[in-house]
Image 1 (cartoon, one colour):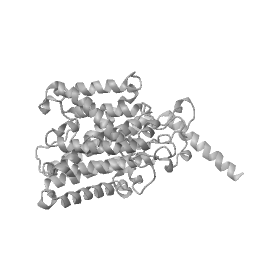
Image 2: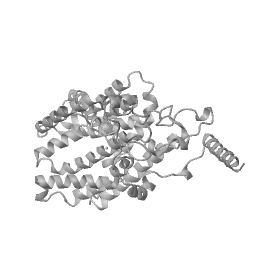
Image 3: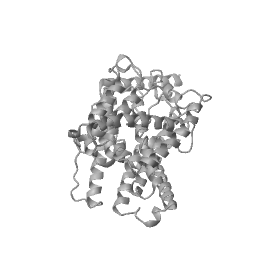
Image 4: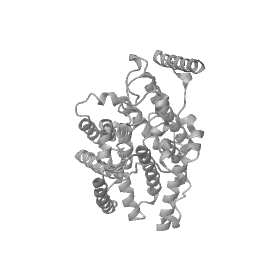
Length: 415
C-alpha cells in the first residue's frame, strides 16, 4: 500500500531539506507557502525545515526530493502487486513467499515517510484546514463510495455506510488523520518510539478495542509513524550508503527464503496489524512478542528498500505526487476483480499468468498516479472548500502583504 527517495551512496549529493509533497500519500497536499510577515507567521512550513524559503518564488516545483517521490511510487506499485497476489495465495509457494516479504515492509515504509513529513505539523489553522481537506474529506467520500460499490456492484446487501468503521483501503486515511493530530504530542515525549511500541503491544493484546476507527491498525502501526517523526535527513542517507546497499542483498535474499519457509506455517494476518493476538488464535503474550519482532523485521526490510530506492529523476518520479490517487482508485478495480472472478482462470495460476497479472497491476497503478487522473479526481482528493472555512487574520495579513509587494514591484517597474 506505497513510493519515493534520493542521492546515491557516499559519492552522491547531500540529501536536501525535506519538502512536503504537493499531492498524495503519505499526507495531505502541500502547504501554501506562508509569507513571513511577523510573529503570527513565524516558523517553518508544516513539512519544511526551518531554513526552507517561505515565498512562492523560492519554492519551485523542482525542489521536490526525487528520493521520496521514487520511494512512494515504488511502494504503491508493491501495494498493487500484493493485492493481485492475494487471490493466488496457496497456489504458488513463490507467490506466497513474495507476498510475505512485501507485506513485511511496504506499509511501514509508507508510514515512516508519512511521519517524516509530519515533523513540523502543529495546530495552526491553515494546517488543520489542509488536514481536513486533504485527509478527512477524502476519507468520507471514499468510505461512502467503497460502501456503495460493495453494496450495489459487489452484491453485498448488508453493506452499510459507517464512518466509524473504515472499510477496505480507507483505514489508512483515518490512521493518518489521527497520527497527524497527535504529532505535536509526540514531540513532547522523552522516548517517543518506545512509548509508541508499548501502545502497539497493548493494542495487540486488547481484543476489546473493536473496529471503531480501525484503532487496532492505528495503534499497531503507530510506532512507524512516530519513528518517521524523529528521523532526520541524515538517517535516510545512512541507509543509502554503498555498504548498506551491498549488505541489503543477502538480507533480502534471506528474508525471501524465510518467507518461503514460513508462508504455509504462519498466519499472514499478523502483517495486517488489524487484530489482537487472541483473535488470531494465539496467547496474549504472543501479541507482545510479535509486535516487537515484526517491528524489527519491518525496519530491517524497510532499510533495504530505502537503500535501493534511486535518488535521481526518472520517468516515474513525478508519479510519486499522485500515489494517494493510485492507492484509493485501484481498490475499485481490485474489488471488481474479486466480484467477477478475473483471477480464477486456470491460466492465471501458471507462472506466466502470475507474471502477467503482476505486470498488469503495476501498469494499472502507474496509470492511476498520472496527472490526467489527478485532474479528474482532484475534486475528491484535494477539494479547496474555501466556502467551508473562515479566513483568519494571519492569512488576511499574508494576502495584504503579497498585494502590497506586487503593487510596489509594479510601481518600481513603471518608474
